[in-house]
Length: 489
Image (cartoon, rainbow, N blue to C red; front, side, top):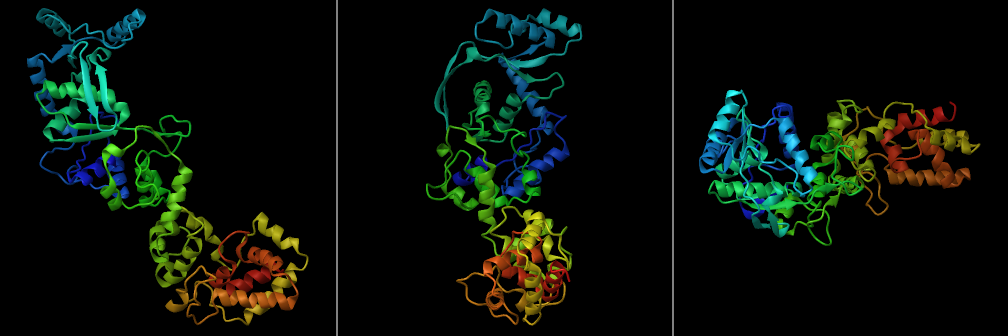
């Protein structure tokens, strides 16, 4: 995301390169996770897979001849050498260095100065060499990082690292440098765990007589304990958030704030606003903790930005399992009202489906809270029976799935006390409430005592949208059936 934002803010090109040299992990399925995750977040690339460009191919396994050419140059210049060590020999060398307690533990460089005869002997014995980069010994470097600033490092802390395997497949540090040169990369933004890799890569750029890009090593995303976020702490696959119904705009917004600040008085912003404000130098040095509770809060804020029609369309993939297919066309206005009633109560699109089951069918299952509310008042059954008679004479809309006109179905819900009364052929939620209050006065029952068994009878629970939005949405036949069932007939 920060690479994308930096490229857009600087007026450059954002390039997507697939580093697929780990063949065991690099599958088409893993590629689709990357591409679909970026698209879902709204991060587009100017060059790369499915788009092409002047600097392709964009898959490293299609660039093997380029790595071989660069390796031959480094061998010829003395910046690289073949290493014939077995894994056992490398490990033994590390243990010796560890015992010496010099502070350096890595490859001991035993193949660094082999003679031609020694190399020929290893080759004759069937050993196939890795290719290692010859690190300068005890060279002090002053490097500038766009996030970390000026940092002094010394090559004595770094060993001769493997560039190329015997099969010609490059390792990360080598491949990305060759690719950065070939693709004219000017800026690289990545996690600060790669800072040491950046030192190795700077020296490799130098050995290849090429200019090193500007590096920005950004802080890691942390868990609640301040350690690197892992799959044990939260979903780390972007498509998991998509499948769970997180609004992509909110996820983008939240991730953007993990290390960077948009404004002192605003947490919510669009992609275009981020690009206009983004400067890679303003990213902080400290890691940011991932807080799913705040992410869910942000999701709710975004979800409430949409109109009911927009929200219904976005939630449709999750609602399809709970709502008859025809309802999306013949009763779209009614469904929009259902969604509007819950926009203040949910954070994810997927949460709608679990909330609206009570709307369908003449009868509703009572949960424990609803049964308690129905049994709390001895006269509750008589009240509900009388209220059913009251509603029978009211001008309620018919129950779903009977046909209703577009005007009646599209009454703005949930009802607001300060909102103007909508034009409607039926009693609106506000009129139903006024009628109900008058009913309880005639009955001599406190309004607050009546609404709890009423909600229990109509919804089967003690939670939900405005009670008279509930009556309006359920309609005449369903309300009467549920009230009489709760009253015992």
